[in-house]
Image (tube, rainbow, N blue to C red; front, side, top):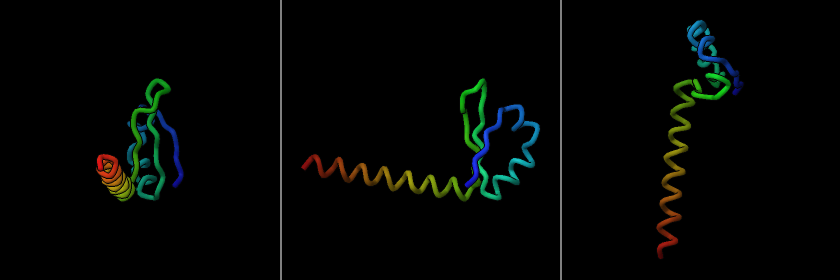
Length: 69
């Protein structure tokens, strides 16, 4: 996955082309005043990340449960 950095003004001005890039597996890190505030990724990538996070939480719960024994 390729990642690009843009500022909020660029995002607003180029949203249509950015969304096309995102569909083609490009991620955008959105900056405001030189600070990252958001990441724009495809819905497919979002679902993947969301699923990975859920598995991580389940693994952490198992670890905590095992430490309590």
